[in-house]
Amino acid sequence: MAEAQGFAYAQRADGSVVITHHGRAAGTLRGGRAAEFLAEVDGDPQLVMARWTGNYRRGNERAARQHPRNRA
Image 1: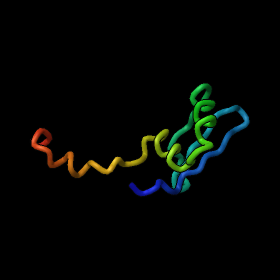
Image 2: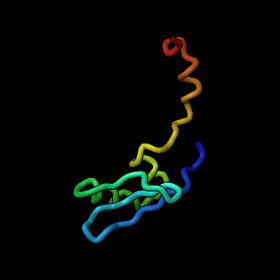
Image 3: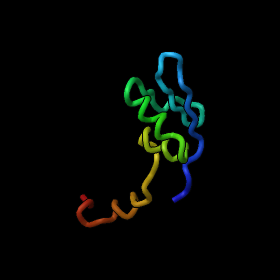
């Protein structure tokens, strides 16, 4: 899987976190979710931000589309 790229985050004075993807807002986290995100972001920040925004692919979309169960 290719690494996620283009994500950035900014922590605001009120404690909320804004995650952007290529300069566009992808999500805003507040309260406990913002604290969880900040605790987790130390490892691989690009992948963490992609997971938190739900903005990354798992690589199996094409195969799943061709599965007999998903043909309509």
